[in-house]
Amino acid sequence: MTALLLLPLALLVIFWLPINTFGWVAAVLVALGAWEWAPLAGLKGRFYQVLLALIAFAVLALVQYVVPVSSVWAFGQPAGFYSLMVLLAGFWWTVAAVLITQYPEPKRFWQQNKRWRILFGALTLLPTWTGLMVLRDWRHDTDPLLGAWAILFVLLLVWAADTGAYFAGRAFGKNKLSPRVSPNKSIEGAMGGLALAMVICAIFVYLRPVTISPSAMVVASLLTVLASILGDLSESMFKREAGIKDSGSILPGHGGILDRIDSITAAVPVFVLVMLAMGV
Image 1 (cartoon, helix red, strand yellow):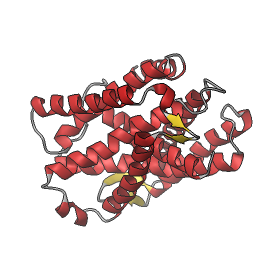
Image 2 (cartoon, one colour; image 1 turned 90 degrees about the horizontal axis):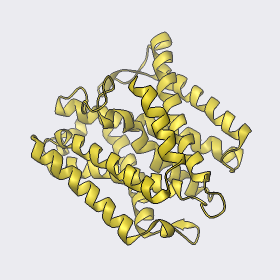
Image 3 (cartoon, helix red, strand yellow; image 1 turned 135 degrees about the horizontal axis):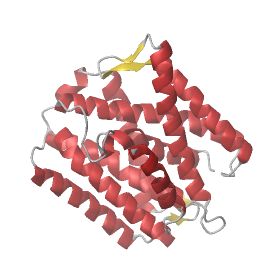
Image 4 (cartoon, rainbow, N blue to C red; image 1 turned 180 degrees about the vertical axis):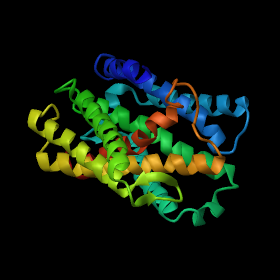
């Protein structure tokens, strides 16, 4: 029931809301993610959850005030803060890949350091908002809905990858993808998720709601899906260290906000980074 309610709500937010209002809604989502990150950072108590949420929202509110929606893009590139966040996202997810593949060895450097874990949360959540804003404002002057379609494309890739991984993993899963981080995930499941995501890519290439070359769509889709898997594993790693099963309980039957957007936190900024790197 929760999923059925969230889908039309997501479409409404992406396609109908003005970009400025969309930014505020996305900021609230990130603030809720920051609320749930507090326990993952080893900060216990409602005070720290409220504090991280308020800091995250205040930072994003300040960005919206200093860099208005009309200035998100400048001379074909995201404006200063937005470009910095996208680059930091690329750096962070590269680091996260190392932390995950080498787990549990690297945890001795950050497990007992709350500041590092707060920083990891900031690098996970803030670029998500940045990526969403960059995408939503993409070529807005010439096609007001192009950015909305781009966001929907990324979300569908992530949802297809999750769905395909679940069913393929149940049917064929034998080889563990990352047994020390998430024992239930399999290589076969990941391949099934990638295959279903590429079906979404093929549909978008055929229908062309996002007017970029088919080759760019394929490359961006592949890397975005791989990033979404990384985002999922990253949250699993931090939850494992915190001894937490679900990041929260705000969504009945679906856990917390982070449990729903973990893949998106990596997929969105990586998609933006890939598209910028290809000059699209």
